[in-house]
Amino acid sequence: MPVEKGNVFLNAPGTLNLEMKSHAQTNTSTAGGAMLLLRSVFACVIAAAFSPPAFTIVSSAVISDGLTPCQPAPSERQLRWHELEFYGFIHFTINTFTGKEWGYGDEPPSLFNPTDFDAEQIVSTAQEAGMKGLILTCKHHDGFCLWPSKYTGHSVKNSPWRNGRGDVVKEISDACRKHGLKFGVYLSPWDRNHKDYGRAEYITCFRNQLRELLTGYGPIFEVFFDGANGGDGYYGGARETRKIDRETYYDWPETIRMVRELQPGACIFSDAGPDVRWVGNERGVAGDPCWATLNSEDFVPGRADEARLNRGDRPGSHWVPAECDVSIRPGWFYHSREDDKVRAARNLVDLYYSSVGRGASLLLNLAPDRRGRIPEPDVKSLREFRRILDATFGGDLAQRAKASASNVRGGAARFAAKNVLDGKRDTYWATDDGVKTTELIIDLGRELDFNVVRLREYLPLGQRVEGFAIDRWQEGEWKEFAKGASIGNCRLARGDRVKTSKIRLRITKAAACPAISEMAVFAEPK
Ligand code: FUL
Ligand code: CA
Image (cartoon, rainbow, N blue to C red; front, side, top):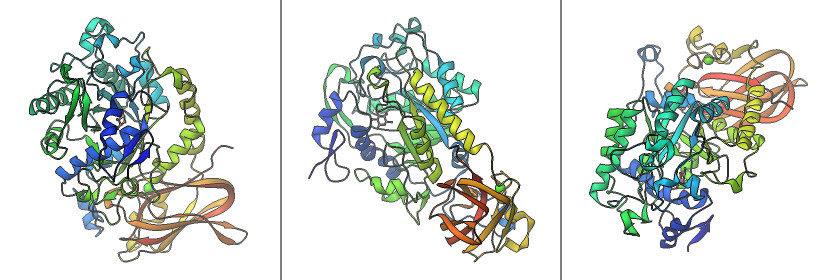
């Protein structure tokens, strides 16, 4: 039975209804619904086609202390990605000027004409919001390229903007470098403009375009592959529906090899990886628990399981952490009709807790307007969001606390309980092998108000904790404040504001002796 979901019809999991394809053509407003399913049926192709053995960093120091990573463990490029936590998406193209969410591919390039394009304003807005990087839609499904690609005429070079000599990718990536943000690219595999889409020739063109992006704009931190379903489109004037075999058409292993060769530090995103997975919704909400581990080989084309992507698998064969992509507006692209529907700062803060706070990343979309600037209501919301986060996380209430643990690995200072308080990701508290239930107490030395505890595992050793609880000391006894299963890169336990002088972390279940790099305590502003 087809089930209506948003504005798209779903059949049994993963199968595309033809109605959906015709819908694709007329989709003009909502961001979520239709695109959601397309991603799930497409992107798992990548995981299925390319399922590398989990690559593990094992430093010699780790081996000499007898602490071995709990498999699978993150690769070096994934560890760097984990440090970012919060970064932005920029959806900007011809759709910005037509009011659509998906262009059909027949829009004349002359429509792309921002009146006051300002990469500085876009990037500094992102930076002030605390974003650590930006991923730009260099080409969306309509095929229009924001850079002067040699491989199509459907690009900025045939637009009146900057007299056809403009390059949005260059201006944004330069501004990112200047402001210390990482830069990433979104290149839609599905191209509704290209005459050869559906044939082998197009794959060559797609790779050529990808090569231009990976070689012309400096280091890339993430390559985002999405929505490559095949369906109806302009296709050089044919105006027809083109079907592709999702398992074979794109030959993903070859494209992935190319990304590895040209940008070895870039993480590749698709439904089920290889490096970063989709969180299974476009609402910014990771599962609880949300494991960084996933049995990627289960994800075959046409059978994406959104619930599993949302939570991950435990145990899981590969390290494929979740990314939460969500827009600050109802649509991904700018529409003036949505100027009063921008997410409020408090809502953005909640998204931060439900994504970053569950070990995933937050990829928050911003939509430059027809001027080519982030609109004022969005800037205002982002500023207030940042103000709240800074007021919360600016001061760790446990900084001068004393820590003690029921077990410390070999009694060694290197693994001491106090390592959770030093604000450093690479120092941690660990227990002896075999000690999988244990506790750590921090004594704050005075009574104070708090409502958030941040925990982090030492990620090079993999995700080890499978159950934990946090208690606070009140009126002579321990009272439970929060509990959960996964910690991973970051766990924000958030509750009501309460008083305490001591906080206890109990590890109630673990796959290997825990290695905790941080326990910090905060109070959200009233
Ligand atoms: C979806 C796309 O179809 C949307 O237009 C948007 O780019 C979003 C991030 O992914 O699947
Ligand atoms: Ca530490």
